[in-house]
Length: 431
View 1 (cartoon, rainbow, N blue to C red):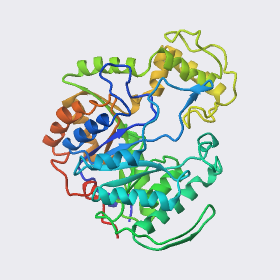
View 2: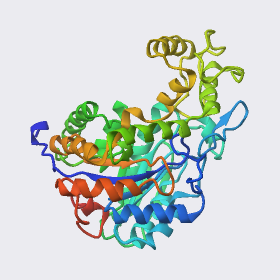
View 3: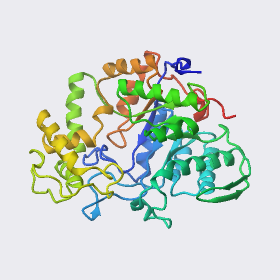
View 4: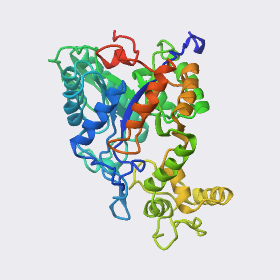
């Protein structure tokens, strides 16, 4: 079997990626809703289901980000527990999948497997797990084990964790002795209508890709640009086949942002307004401070990047993995050169990094629908996890304006394929 055995389905799926900690969601606008009030979640999940979205995907952070010794409160930060929210969403929906981001490093396999199994049963086969790993002690400080897991071990640990969970969901007794835990457990719940929760995985590193193609059903990819998406597909198919699975076995759904309007000109105007709301002067300055390691509040956000070098060799972890271990002085030199060549201010530069320009679809409804038709034709992706820039109404334009045009082109489902998430994603039955 080889990559030539891969056959594009010709159809795209959508998921809603309701982020946790992030810079892309606008919260400084009168249109913005609460990130905690269930009404925001209710409106988004029901709108997504009306638009035949395959899944509603919750991100989750285990620790608040910090900035200069204080909680960083310029972005959306934190939310209630994902599985609690999804259990509530299950009661008001009937078709859409419910994806919980949950960490293998700071959960116990039996406990997490049982909670996900419960969600799968309560939703009648619509649950999914986005598998993530963490190795830093900064996050681990919230847990009794701290940062006990070496970086090199995090995927090895995750694979063992997932294998245990799969055994539990299949109703098999588990007698596991591993490097990090011992388990002697007999499951007490019946197998769910879809066999087990669907498994998402977001690792883009070579090791992460191997875990995904060995264990997961769907990859939450960072590559939405067409050429990069095609390259990623080729690599994933090769790894999937090498893992002994059919070439089409692992679906790919990159994160994407959509800024739409009736005309291309109106879409560009909307994009400019959205970018201004996503990254203000304070966010731009704070972004550079994480790398420079010093107070930059005296700088003009609409002026050039600092001429002086950072005072730190490497950035720390207080804002999360995005900043961790970055070679600050090397980056500063490269960034100044890039900003000078493009004529960018601090704010424009920070906007290019904090938002998703490379993963954004900006244009008229018809213009974007035509672009997406090429993704469906080539099989570059199986769909997109859409990260709405506005909560809770950020899916309205997509569902009301884009989805009908995609359906007219025959590249988006007219209805749900079945009652389970596995069926709606076109995944093979568990067996």
